[in-house]
Image (tube, rainbow, N blue to C red; front, side, top):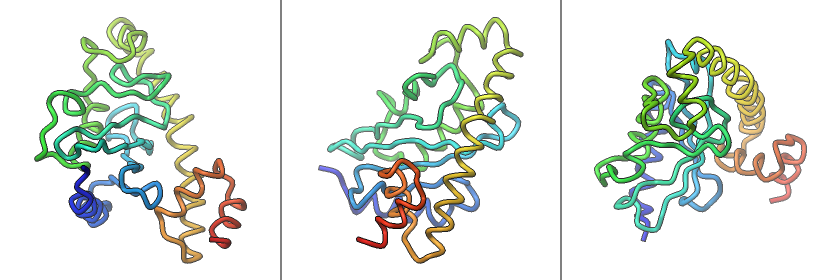
Length: 194
């Protein structure tokens, strides 16, 4: 059974420290087992300036089992599937410990962006490019960041900010926007009718 008291404490911790860490976690709806994480691209990497959305699903055994995480934002990285967003990271598998939190898991994913492990890839094509044509890899990763992590984050964050300024809760706004495919007017109608 998921320890929802702990999950709420973790969400509060992330909320308190979001300005310093840049990491945000919010519920997708009233169900605390489905969350959305946002991590900033690390400085000095091709991901710098990007805002990366991560889908988080908590298994019934959380915190004794690791959260299931995958990138929603497309990212070009050896340890992240360019197709599905699946993440190859030991702490999300066999190296998980109940002492870790959602924030530390997201910090580890952010660190993975800074330090790829091409010898243990999730995406073999990207790993080969990283090892054999590093400059091409950097250019492609930077292009994907510009195309997917900057444009979408600016559009979504702008919509969220406008709706939050109208008095709606951040998590509710994000889940409603997701439910209506990002259409701000439909989201507003749905928020007003609920």
